[in-house]
Image 1 (cartoon, rainbow, N blue to C red):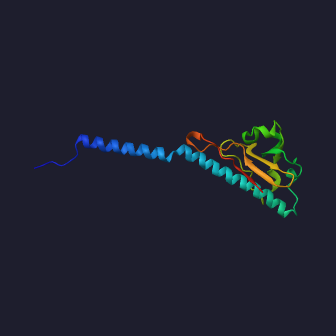
Image 2 (cartoon, rainbow, N blue to C red):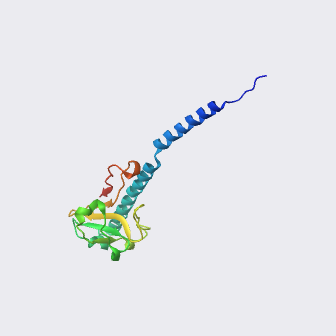
Image 3 (cartoon, rainbow, N blue to C red):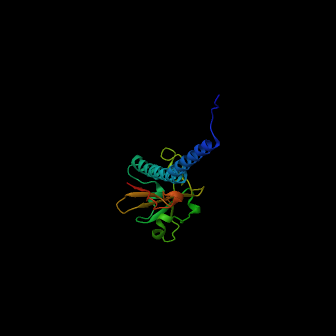
Length: 167
């Protein structure tokens, strides 16, 4: 009568092969990279949402801008904050252009018909600093962008995409 089963060597080889495959899959999936890509996708969504709200407000009010934007200086960068009393100009994307200015636009009073809540950056946003900026040019075009997009390589390395929308 012969006994059937696996030898210890066969089991070790199978476990080693499974370990190698699991390691390769983990590296291929790269959860850190997926996290950076996910946060950047949220930033794209947020800047689009903010700009849509601003443009809808303008369309509903016969071309007039929201009062905070109407008073904003043209061709200057403005940090979008939830509270203009706590303006922080630590926006890396426009650090050179903003030149230490504390010029902010508070979107809290734009109305829930346009913006239910002011979006905040998924990594650096908090109760006062949204992590987004705005510029209005002399022709009336508005650009909204993300202050600190992340590189989409492993660990946030690599060139960060420029996340901004203009209308």
